[in-house]
Length: 356
Image (cartoon, rainbow, N blue to C red):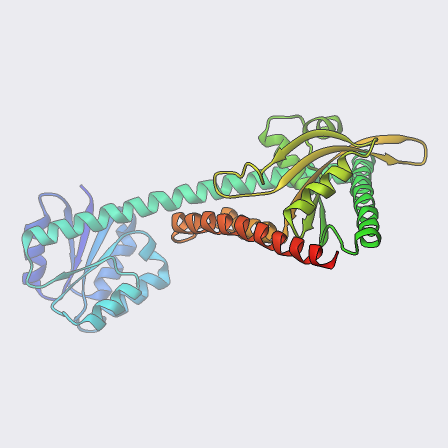
């Protein structure tokens, strides 16, 4: 049976609690705070709970709680206050100090048993969860250390650094072609088809993690063959028709090959995500060769990009309250954004027609 320490300066209270609990637990008693600390020092590991009176001479219940906190013992067992105090301030103070529950005097047999049982079960469950979280955190730390070691090795390889140079080159190549189209539009139509280009090169850590997660070997050839998003560009346009016009002009260039296309504008994801995605094979021109490299290119309107940024924060933010409600609100926003994009496009078209 688990051991319970009853701390109360009134012998009658100690014996009454012993009588109520001795069928289920081994009962240890202490007549004051100092004796309680001494007994816990001797048998803390075997103690399942502490029932603690607040009003005691020399060392009262609050002093005992402070001592338990200072020694770190409050993490070992639940502490339940046994007291005739009924004021909210006293209860709040105890709960803020880490007390698990209150048992008010005079004692009721079923109340005492149930409160102690519930407090011990909740405490045990919390400890198990904490251990599980710590185990997962340790596993994550070990995984991150493995990733760190492997990526450090990658960084030190000249061949890997050259590969990253080639991916940076394909980003520059696609950016240049888009900027040329933008300049042409500016001259021919007195407007620009896109507002901004954002680019990113996948980090060695992300490359290793993705290869490992998908079960691919961590080699240069594996990176080339299995990862299509090492080099990524996001093109932010003002209107939906600019997206399709610009994408068509880029992908129809005779030396660009479309590996994959996904249109999440005409066919949005269930959560409302909208964007036009391409995996392109684009030539880069090195000192001694022409080489094709893959690049992921996404086209979005300003509103689509703002929505995706907010959804990304929800996806990777832990412990978000009302997550289901936020997801539903984001879906509504996505529908509104779609309508707004096309309304704004129609307004622009009317303005353009009025100038002709």
